[in-house]
Image 1 (tube, rainbow, N blue to C red):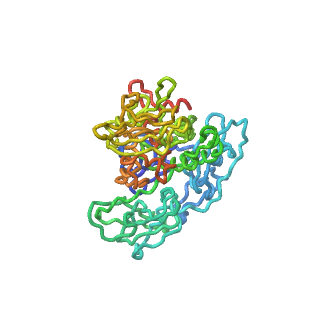
Image 2 (image 1 turned 45 degrees about the vertical axis):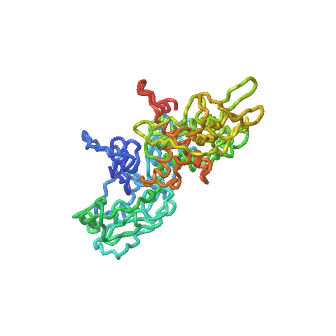
Image 3 (image 1 turned 120 degrees about the horizontal axis):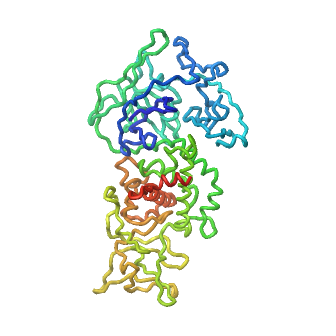
Length: 563
């Protein structure tokens, strides 16, 4: 699962390889950490002989191939365009010679996807969508004039592998996929003989280790002697020169018997580079920032101060890229569109709209990070709010809500003393509080209730709807955009992104133990981000994964049907 292929109509159009410790996730359709997916063995499919396509790529004699790569043939004579993306261009573009029926996705001048408009629609370069042919005019495109593209393997091709000790600079550019998204630092390439220097996710230098050394990511340097646990890198290709060519370089195997190395402390895994789907998903939202803020981020007719668009976007980056594959927030990744060969981004946009509509009814509406005390009782004309509602409201007992047996990540039930930041500003009820039972001279001091007529807290053995009169162990009230409640939800936040995630190399919030102080979600310096992250994690964990085994109903399938 280190290597994978891109297919179109049953034909291989590209061969790719996952970097570092990632392997290809067949379900998600991208390279994922090996701790988040397992390698499903595949066999060579049984196929009938495939007929040649109508337009063949021109045959180029071996002797005519220059050392730098294959020269682009003229589209005027062959109709074949090997490099359809203009240099450094990123975005969608009509594919040359297809009468606007086909279009391509380019990234920094490299072809990353090929798509086709359905039915009678054609691609509109201005709107970047397939439109009715009656409402758009096809603007033909020609094959861009491009310099020959060098083979990526040729960067390490040598006839005499005597490279100076410590590594030598190879080039100032590398593959656009060598650097994880937004990552700055040194990153090994798959063979561990070469590595790149990254700055904000871009390659700014490419280097090679001495022939007797390997680049070790933990130490960020080329090392000669490695002891300890077993370690290996993928084999570099070995190619013999063609008998008809005198210019083809010789590729030599770099690898001695498998060396070993000592275990080192866990280091942060760099953030994976986002897929094209997510990049366009993100751009789509950013282009509509003003509209979203004016409609969604509103509390009682005024802009929300507790929930803002920039914090929402930064949190989205985290829940899409840093969570395990089966918990990542769904933005349409790995799904085909409702029309053939269209992006699954449409599904992602409907999913985010459903999430935001729920957030509008929960945290955004009251402009609060903490759940309010609202489950009141009436005694005549007096409205009373039991302070023991911190333990649970409307029939729920938050402390008792544990995780399923296969995911036992709930926080331990411990006694803490915590007071919420926000209280019910509409009724002036005080913020929730949890603490151990207090006994004075043999009498228990009860938290009591809040009287909305006298605007005062009355200490008495006043029970909530579940009969609770105390607030011991009741620190799991709702927090964040969805007012997420319970020990299970907070425990998963810690396991996936807090201190509990450090063992997996995830350092999003390594200094926070959410189980020992869940109110840190509303008090930490990153609270504006955390309140979104918690809500998005609950949505992906409880809503996106929902399935009824009896009826076969599941959220993602119903979402696609709706779209």
